[in-house]
Amino acid sequence: MNKQAEGNLISQKADDVLIGFKNSLDFGALFFKEVFSGGFEFREFVYQCYRIGNKSLLLISLTGFVLGVVFTKQSRPSLEEFGATSWLPSLVAIAVIRALAPLVTSLISAGRVGSSIGAELGSMKVSEQIDAMEVSGVNPVKFLVVTRVLATTVTIPLLSFYCALMAMVGAFLNVTVNEQTNLNSFIEDAFSSIIFLDIWTGIIKAICYGFTIGIVGCYKGYHATKGTEGVGRAANSAVVTSMFLIFIEEVFLVQVTNWFR
Image 1 (cartoon, rainbow, N blue to C red):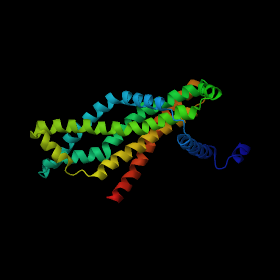
Image 2: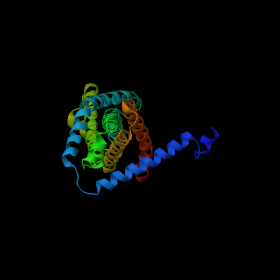
Image 3: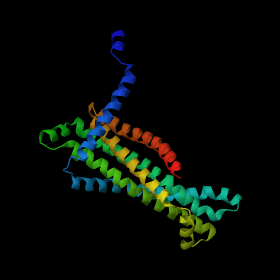
Image 4: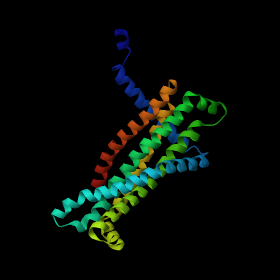
């Protein structure tokens, strides 16, 4: 026990964390190296974009619509106390575009897309398909990792805007039922307080979250070990780690955007 403890820099768990952090940095550096080295797999990239969008579209549609309805219902009583129900469309638009749509879309995608990427690459790793690709002369990082990370980075912002659209549809239906507001008035009220910084905030957040989901899922799957058990662990770890990093990024990006405001 003493000899084993002496072999550790700090402790076994602390050393594992530091080694994992170092390996993740190396993996990220390898990704950016392959991105700018040429030979982009465009067809695989388009296919991954289709898979990500197709896999998440129905759930994001339902979630976005319910988000708009529930947020509008919960906000109305507070605004009614001050006689400010006319601000409801603007309040919903600001909350959805700035924060809720990117965050909700990313969390859903982390659960569905991140786990799928981790499990897929993990099964390829433990079954030695990745090693076979290297032997056959195919660059597995460029074909498997680069395409998936770029696909999540591009697709998550698009899904985020779609989620925001569905949320605004849900909010409009709720406002129409209660205040008999027509569509033109709702749109004018909703976007009267929206500025370009709000839109860019949502875009930047979604891009960062999409990149996080892709790179974490690929990293966990690419380093899976111990057979089928390792595949399940990689999928689960991809989801948990992605969500944890997304919340950290949310706090940081909110501080940065507020500083610009």
